[in-house]
Length: 273
Image (cartoon, rainbow, N blue to C red):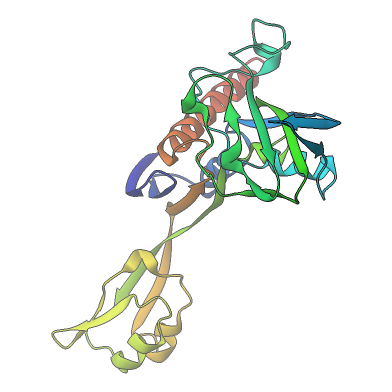
């Protein structure tokens, strides 16, 4: 199995998986969706009662139920260092909560205002501040306030979607486009292609952007088979995005690592039967 990177940005990636099988491609896709660990807010503590701010009293109340606010906080992407943090049930603290398995955020705002994710302050390293500052949490009216302490822990999307790092994970078979020497209705084929894959150069029809082909075969119908669309079931065009908790490169590296470990463990289990 080989990987050729086509595009690698901080939060999105496009690559070709070569010398593989549909089963392996789907296993990689499912690993990216379900098995990549990340930090996410799992416990939220709300202060109840009045709050005194410079002699002015605010009431710790919002228009939303606490459960809704807690859910919104849980979906805020939390920066994750896989070398620094571990799962609570695997931590040396026994799951009680320590800097190796827990990140605490404070949220203290007084109305009238809109409370955003960027108002969450990490109690510790400033590097742990969330990267998306403008995710709306709740709208506070005059006299209303929130004082919250939120705890982020490690998990995977097999438990809850708030621990899902990769989004829009998908792949397609590598397109194979064959154009005959004499292709009728070439201009119609160019116009019919929804992805603008085909162009006319020097009077000849050419596949200018073959990786964009979605194999709809509209060009083949226009040219009475002059353009043939096929697919390679040993190569796949992958693309995905991340929520910002991890970079796209980290997600790809971790998915390959997890897949390799799982395959090795499965092989050893079969050998021991």
